[in-house]
Amino acid sequence: ELATAAERNRLARDIHDSLGHHLTVIAVQLEKAAAFRERDPAAADQALADARLSTRHALEDVRQSVGALR
Image 1 (cartoon, one colour):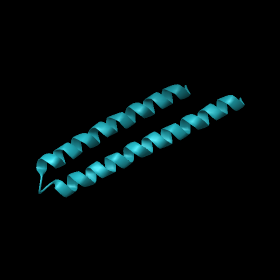
Image 2: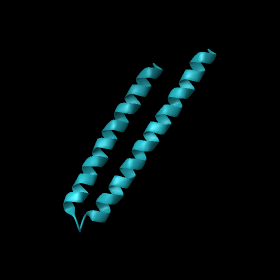
Image 3: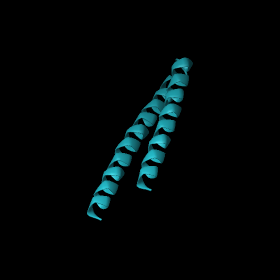
């Protein structure tokens, strides 16, 4: 039971760290898109594309971690 609890705690930390990283990247990319919207629409579009990609990666990471918990 102790080993199971330790593994669950490790996975919870991994989820927290991974998701926190992805959410930070998404927030930065959205800020960049807002800042460049008028001056450089191509850069804004790229920032939005990067935010979408990070969102997909975050979802994949969460799904893998949840699957590991099962």
